Image (cartoon, rainbow, N blue to C red; front, side, top):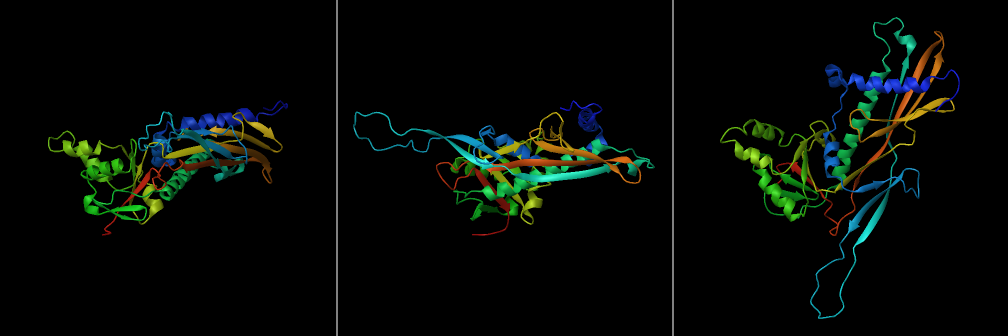
Length: 338
């Protein structure tokens, strides 16, 4: 907080954040600036791990992920021993390092708008930066999910397993596929699984919802209702091009972590002002923001400089008792045969 006479930067920056929020109520502006990030909603839906940023032992950006382990509690042959008890459960932690995932910077000059029909609108530029960072994180999340895929243990049925992918013929991508997917989830010991999909099943799902009120359409709607499915038409297939992918995520399989260093209230730091802000689109994300202004030669008007930084990552929760069971399975629309 600045106590220097004549300094009004803090309230100006706070007002820009307020204006950015107000712009979201304009429908056309929302169409132009709203990012596509449904994959992040899916990860958020399955996250159960505790992320602790307070315990920082090694590096500035470290966070700890904590979970419980019961792998050593197993059935054994009867012995008749009077000794009771056995192996213990344990609580475990893994330290993960967060680094700068992406930055977005922009400059706006008052001189550019002095003879322009438009006024300088920093709030819109903030929304544009916010959108870019959310979408960058969503695309990174798809790549992480792909990297975390495990091995499907169900070797019979509609899927042909090649490495970490279960290839399913295009003809099978309809409501009846959910009977197979239910068997996959059971055999792989997934808990309350959800599906994240790109184009796979989107039109079949759309038609099933439309026909749900018809007597002969209730079956398809019921099948789609047996496992939650989220569609991200913008990121999943674009990241995996040319493959068309659908992922099954077990509850607790993924964790999302995010950190900021800057304070919530703008703070003067040498020639810059720094603060943090929450994403207008995905409130689970926060950014570090730096701002300064300068006199532009020739006009003596102000030039405003902003940089937004996202420190975040997506983690696969530590492997359970079976190392190949990561809680993530990948299904590909493919004509691959055994």
